[in-house]
Length: 135
Image 1: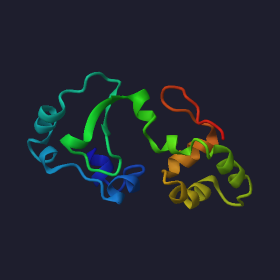
Image 2: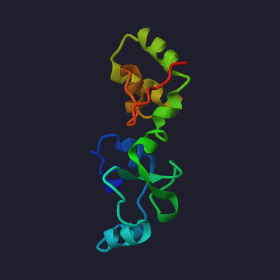
Image 3: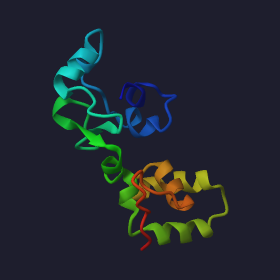
């Protein structure tokens, strides 16, 4: 959480800290980890990650929960691309630049991360194996 929100060198920082997403003060500082465990409990298993309920909201006790990785994959911006996969791939076929350049140029339009567009172009799957569904 802290890396995503406060480290500009973190991969895809622009989609957390760059968007103004923060970690609540209670979870920062000297007793931050103890407060986090008090509020959220210990990680239920190695397959769980912390998920924001409202993806536009901060990391707070009210806006987070533990979620299994396969379920979390369904709430990411990749899932927003279903129904647009063929369109995106067709548009990229007409693009004269790089994949990264294309992804950066259209990610705002689809309200997803650059990585999501690259996943779409590369035929990537969700963590549980579901494939981005073509139109």
